[in-house]
Structures are given as C-alpha cells and as structure tokens.
Amino acid sequence: MTDLKTGPARVDVTDQAAELLRRLVGQYGPLMFHQSGGCCDGSSPMCFPAGDFITSEADVHLAELDVGLERKIPFWMSKSQFAYWSHTHLTVDVVPGRGSGFSVEAPEGVRFLIRSRLFSDEESEALTPQAQA
Image (cartoon, rainbow, N blue to C red):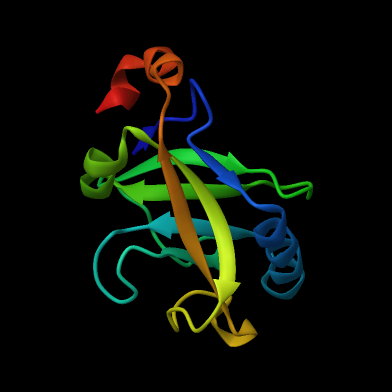
C-alpha cells in the first residue's frame, strides 16, 4: 500500500460531512473511506466501518480526515483512480439523496460525494515526487 499523506492536504471534509461522520461513528464505531471510481455508485466515496473494506497494494492512502473525534478517518483510493485524480484536491461533502447501499450513510437519506479542484501551481510543486503520479 502506498501512503501519500505528505505534502499539501489531498482530502478535506466539509462541516456538514464532518457532523454526519461524527454521528455515524457513534452508530458504527471507527470508519474509513474508499474511493474506487468504478462500479456500484460510480465514483462516489464509500464509507465503511473500519476494516470492513480490505485495502491492498492496489490502493493508496491519501489522508486521515479530522472530524473532531479522537480517531481520524482514513481515506483510501484505488491506484487506478489516483492516476486520474493525482492533480486534484478532494473535499468530502454530503448532499440529500440516496447513495450506495454499501456505504453507511445510505439509511440516512443522504450520500457522500467528492468535490474537486485542481491543485494550485504552488501546491503541485510541494507534492512529494511519489505523490505526483
């Protein structure tokens, strides 16, 4: 597994998503995200109880999301998806609607989604060489 947590933040979380995540941690315990870019709900970030989704050498560890709890929430992405998104900053947000049945927020009537922007020139220069894909 590749760990890309050095350099500028790659993933942030909105206040609304952080609030939901705090509630979900109360229900499910520690959580994790995985962003695949593939089947099921397209490229929506999927939130699972920690350890329910097994990561491997095919995944990269992009961030630890701080939502104001003792334990941060790891954010993983498949290497193939990272090859496309390595130049972008991601923000986990939440919107009304039905997400994937596999992600823990599905029963809440909301779904997580990713908002993205290109890294600035300064941010791109500060990325570690391995994190530039």
